[in-house]
Length: 138
Image 1 (tube, rainbow, N blue to C red):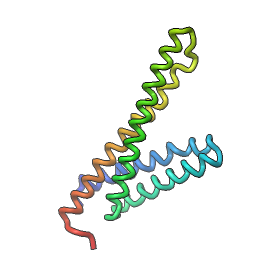
Image 2: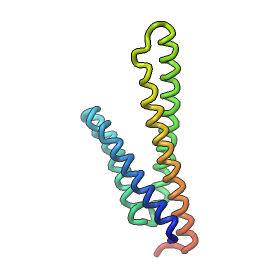
Image 3: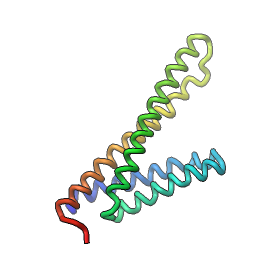
Image 4: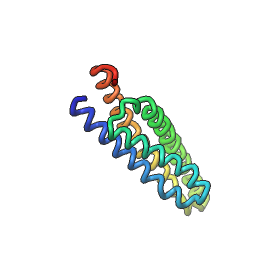
């Protein structure tokens, strides 16, 4: 594997662990249900990150699927943030709007998810291309 894919895959592994760390507050806020749902997601991100770091040749398909789902969730969060900001604008026009800035939270979180997922998808594609060039893993 050439040096560029190694660095890109290592960055993707670190980004994946960053996603795991971002899920930790959700697990503590949502109690048992949050621990089950978000804990499973955090464990999966940890597993993907570890396998990427070790350059496991069988990680390409699960990583692509994971990052595509993460990309989709990021886009949904961006839409959620934009809709919340529009609702806050309408509320402020009628004299309300104490929680108007709330829409920035999902907007920024979604942008971060899209950024990490996009970069990680690129890194996994580079890893797959390097595996194809070097032949099948034994």
